[in-house]
Length: 156
Image (cartoon, rainbow, N blue to C red; front, side, top):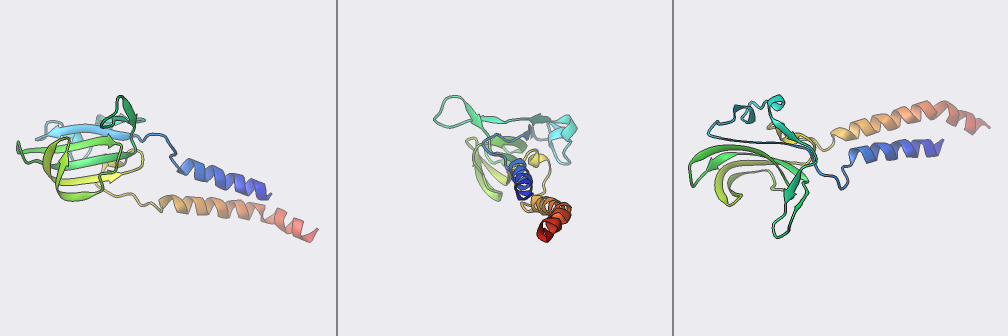
């Protein structure tokens, strides 16, 4: 009985973790409104959803699994173009607003970095505790269903 609960909890934890796999992100760009489906409000059905994102790594040959999705809304300060970029990246760019560098260009605006599939579709932030409620509910259900067997075992 105890092994069954441990297996259930282990399975739930494994499904919540992403391990060494790459992330899935929306990938598009819009310069001065050139791609309305990439702009906000965002239209996921009309945009490219890249599964198992692979990105180049500086100083290396080939591509490697991405770990983060980004959404950049800003202006390229050199050419004065407004840009919206949704992409996959290997390293976190942190969520920040102000002046920053992106692909050798200086930009002003905001970078939103997130770490779960499809998270760069909207300007909201992920609650890292959202999966905890599901896990606690599953444990409670497993324990409730096991309660009669536990009581029988205690009585014997």
